[in-house]
Length: 63
Figure 1 (tube, rainbow, N blue to C red):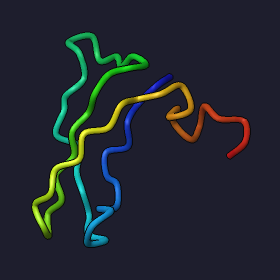
Figure 2 (cartoon, rainbow, N blue to C red; figure 1 turned 90 degrees about the horizontal axis):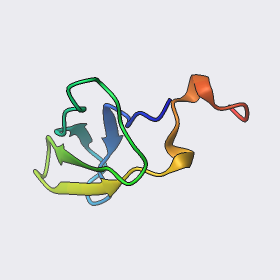
Figure 3 (cartoon, rainbow, N blue to C red; figure 1 turned 30 degrees about the vertical axis):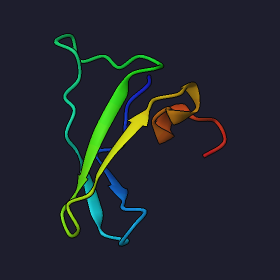
């Protein structure tokens, strides 16, 4: 199942960036969805496009 990480590391300052974008009403995410993150330290916003290789760690055979 495709799902964005709830938290990523800020590329600018190394702080914690948290997911701002909620899933659809049915709780799904699709390839090509744009998700936004905000850094709690520098307040930078990051918009990322979900891709097929962004699957949850439990769904990936290589992890």
